[in-house]
Amino acid sequence: THNLCMCMISRPRLQVFFFSGLLSVVQPAIESVDNQVHSLRISQATLKDCIDNLSRDLTTVRDMQKDLPNLEHYVKKLMNIKRRVATVNSVLTNVQDRVQTLQTRVTKEQARKRALLDANYSGGAMS
Image (tube, rainbow, N blue to C red; front, side):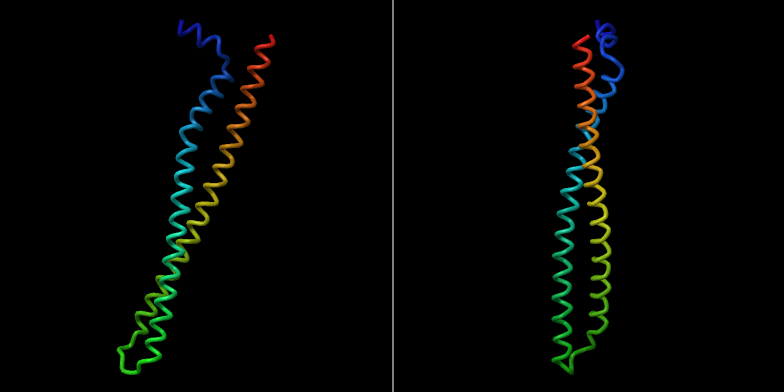
């Protein structure tokens, strides 16, 4: 009976079923990555703001106190870290854009396959 059942389902329908199953597995993973990237971008922006504030505070303290040790080295380190955070944020933005594009494509392909399946099913039911 299993072979008979498989013979009754056309190859295009099997492909659509397979693709739909694959999409149902992949789409939650894509959404999860998208959410994680979004959260990481928010964290990166918060970190950048904190570094900016600390850098301004250190500059203010340095300008106010003449007898303090030279903080220029630390300010430069902070600026370097700030640049790295900006670079990571840029990469994350690109990754999130790509993930969103992929998610859009998956959704469109899933809708196309479902429409094809519906058309094949409707056409087969009328025969």
